[in-house]
Image (cartoon, rainbow, N blue to C red):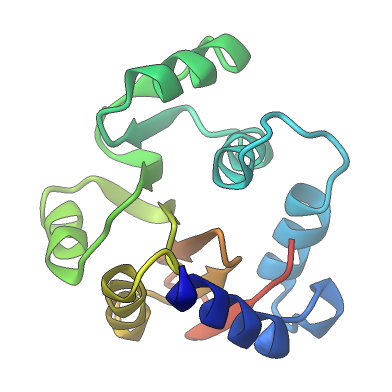
Length: 166
C-alpha cells in the first residue's frame, strides 16, 4: 500500500496532460481516445482497453486467460477474434521482458500492435518489470497512465516515453 501511494505521488509530479505531448500519434490517442467522454467500464484499466479497441478498430485481441473480461469485451464488440496471430491489442496484468520477447518471436505482434499492462505501479516487482520493458530498444512508444501502461512498436517513430494523467 505504501509503495503504491509513493508511486502515485511520483506519478503526479512527473505526469502531464495532452498538451505536454509532442508526438502526433500519442496526442491523437490521448485526446481522441483516452479523454473521449464515453466511458465503457468503471475500472480504469479495462476502460482504457475498451476505448482503445474502439479507437484503433481492433479486430484481434489477446487477453490473459480472463473469461469475465472476454465476456465484457464480447458484449461491446461482438466481432472480436481472440488469440489469433498477429493481434492488434494484448491485455495482460504482468509482462516481463522475457514474455514480451516471446510475443515477438511467436509472431503475435505487428507494427501497430498495442500492449496494455494492468497495474504497473501496484508493487515493486511490477514497477521494475515496467521499467525494464520500456527500456527495451524494440519498444518505441510507452505511455504510463498509472493504473496501466501502454506500449507500442512503431518502426516509423523514434523512442519516446510519456507519463499521462487520465
